[in-house]
Image (cartoon, rainbow, N blue to C red; front, side, top):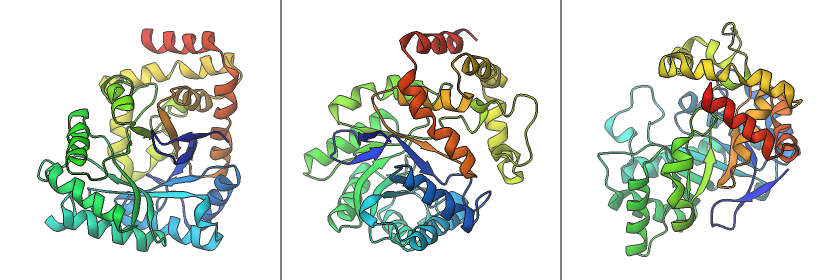
Length: 325
């Protein structure tokens, strides 16, 4: 396993990490969660990603129970949570957003569900137009100083708000955001590669990216149909299926269709090639993998060898394919 610093911090995360989004509590039960977490940890993965909203809190409960049963040394892994959407399907006004109350309540609830004494990483899951950074930053600073959180950051925030939070923190001698969690893959690149570019040096911002396979679109599994046992085949993921397959009028699906043939020429799977492409970006601290079974994790972890093996000429072929398709 390769390890990378979380931005300018001293924390080293595994280049590939494991997350619970859309799988834990839906496709993944308690036994499968335990088996995959054990396998991931044995392979050197040291970061497990979660959020209050994933399966309405069940994802964190499953992960917490699995970690407890495995009795992994707490100093050998990092775990995260995110707050904004709330845990309940129809949250009350105080049960979502980035108010001091909800950020604090959500942190305490995540600690209980994950069965840990502190969160290594804690994210503001989306911007909140109703809550100013003057309330958000001191709240996160307090949670860090109380020892309930080690590093805090944002997810899918625009650069202007990340900068505003960082500037407020500096001006008031508070702990500012250390990381951002954006979507990043061959089909979603602009935010990571262009919008956030100034922040890597100016703030020392770390990037923990999600959906390297564009919810499975870059695996080639959806070329002919949507398998019933796949992520997009789940009945309660109809919104995700529409967002993925119909993105830009189907343009993303058409571009993704070129990946399997390209991967064959490099002697790897489409998933491995797509993940390896994310890894080649030096600003990416970790690429969060999602899986519903160990065989998927095994395949995806092979992306590390692919990233090390392919030369610049190979990556130029990938770039050319996705900029002209």
